[in-house]
Image 1: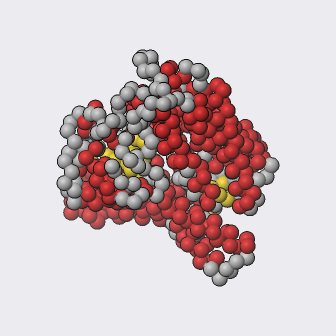
Image 2: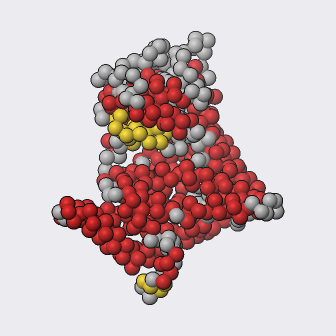
Image 3: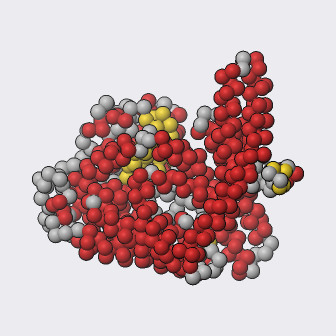
Length: 512
């Protein structure tokens, strides 16, 4: 039996490697808050069923060219480190999976019995495949590339956000006055220089030299820009923020590529970096910083106006639409907006509202669990995925339960809308809720909450929103998301009969 990934990440990595086709099939490795993100040379070499059935794997998501294994917060970093060590060692002796392994059955009694959970897993896989084809558009490709720039920054945003929260709590309580300035410095330093990291990642993503991207973007936060006048006014250090840094590095990539394509090798070494910094830097100072600053200011003003004026309605719409946005891949466009708000105001007011979508999903899954009491395999899938869902990792429930069932996905959106409306209503009443970092949601977001009413009031509003999402998602799904024959209707062919409660089912093949 495979070991617990929390206790033995090396064993998990060793088990994963052959299932994704071996070391020779892996072209890139990265991770975010919850997912191991792999680039694969040949997708058909992946043993999907066996991989999903692996202990510790919460689900699998395909997004463009990225094959993402959901492992959950905390454990994903340790498994990724062990996975990279195996690749560096030449695969750790793991043999490549044979071509066509994607269709091979999992080892052990994974797919036997043809239960409802098995059918849901198959439908979830088909939905992911269709979604991958739909995602191959220029807009969605651009959004994924923007996400690739900001996702690596999330761990630092989380760490600095929690330190900022601790510093704020100590200041409010009047405790440890000697250490709070140090904590404030630690939490603020990264945000003061985030433009440099954005520039570095932008150049890396778009084929430029990363250090040149960072150098061009660094001018955005350099204190000396206060002596530069653009459009009749002196610039302010940090004006334009991450949007200005993103634009500056993109321009730097274009200038660098233009120079390298035209300059001979003897001049390329000297002139290309010089012209990249000079041309891109001047355009950034005299055009991009001002323009990006106006856009960033408009984003902050619009977000504040939206929640203080139409908070309940805005929360209803944002909370209700976020799950479909995730399915379409359009939620990635919100990452730079969140980062801009954190940079401007110290927190993003949008994330706590969007997190309500996960609450609706948890409530919907709980209702399916209660209604389909006879389906052992599906209930096992839900029972395994619910803890991750409570911490904001919703993919196992989405792809393994609600989306294949159909109507529970819609009723989950209803729960998210109700939770969002609850949080938005309190924003109208003066108790706004924000998050000092992006990435976590659900219960994991509590340490990162911030707001004008103090942490206790902010946490109370956020917790009330989660509870509302759970209750409404559960009720909507229980009464309207299923019918008496829902378990039979899961399978399009109608061939699979529900398994009696006294007959234990096989281990579920759906994402956990």
